[in-house]
Image 1 (cartoon, rainbow, N blue to C red):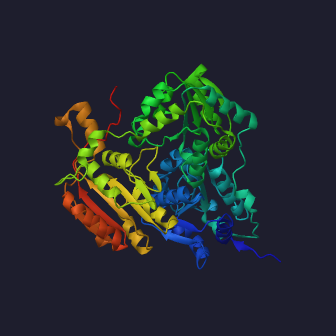
Image 2: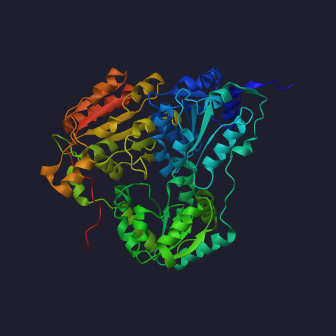
Image 3: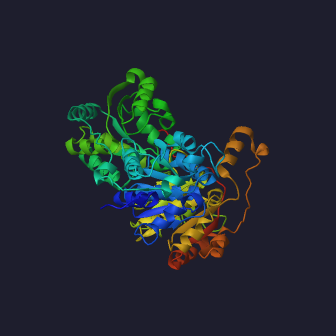
Length: 539
């Protein structure tokens, strides 16, 4: 005879059935029942210092494992803190489940402890958000959340967990594993044939992909499509859009293109709403009807074709059926502009002295990286230099949302997902301040990584805007400590710290940081440079 279980036990069992092995969490009154259910179980909890950090870590875990990342926080302010991280996951199209404790259902509207409108708070920042209504339905709630988070255009989902639902008892009915999967949304054979026909009929076709394909499965599918067509797939996941320095001089290719295939890439500001490719017709392969409507409104008659499909299924189908594009010279040209970096940058290689130019820092750091390196790149101006120069096995950035601060948490989530190889986080001094306490988390859970801080003593992205738009004499409110010892923060929390003021000190400091086997900060005094511009000069 089946015994009744607490809601917390049903919840934990449902997570296990869904394949969860790691949960990122900060404890609190409303979720103590869940912590008790987790005691001695084989789902480990990484216990963080701020609720937003739990969501950011879950996002990095999801990106690198292909699983749904799970964050567990308490109700009230714990939930609202966690919500601050949801826009980054939403814009980056990452399947994350935020589980938040909640006031009991029988006290709602009575001024219960930390009673807040949690579902209403999370709903605009997620694909779906709801309140778990009863104990017996908790497992179905979890499976439904996983399916939604993974489906179509992936993204975060939220469930609020009232304490009486967690404490109540019911007979568990765990969904089968298929219930956790996204409903299929394939590209139809007819649409696949039509899209490939249009690509081959165009002389200068571009395939632009969205963030949903920046994971192991998506990257493999993209590589297969590139091999089959001979055309690169262009990942646009930066708030800088055409000025994303990792894309070289991509604006040149867009200006010449006669066809742009948006493969899960929304029509938005990063493409200047279609104006970046003024001569092109567009094809939208899109799982979201609202975004199809937006593309139709923005492009009008230039939108030649729409196909409803999930990005990953569409990419796989296209790769399987594709043939080589008849204009290989165009593929070569596109790769050339993507790879472009100004020849003048050679002057920064091994440039002695200090403060160190951001390009000098990036070029030096690259020598310490290998094919086993997972790169976490964040920040304003210095972050753009890092993104332009650094290469590794895989890369996570702060994404289209453009909010800085997540990268320290990304690195900890990445190390949990990648126990072997190097994990390197690069950021500015402004970014470092957001989640510096999480070095304690990394130390406690033995999750080492190397954090390289470009310290220019200013919120430089904002300073550059003030300088450009209002004049240097009106720039204010962006100053930070010029020689703040962020390295000592890491050391005080049990990690390793290095302080670098001149190029001659840089390589030995990096070697010691990697050799330490600890969460390490290499705090480098740099020149306060604007982000690089990579547009090639006219011939």
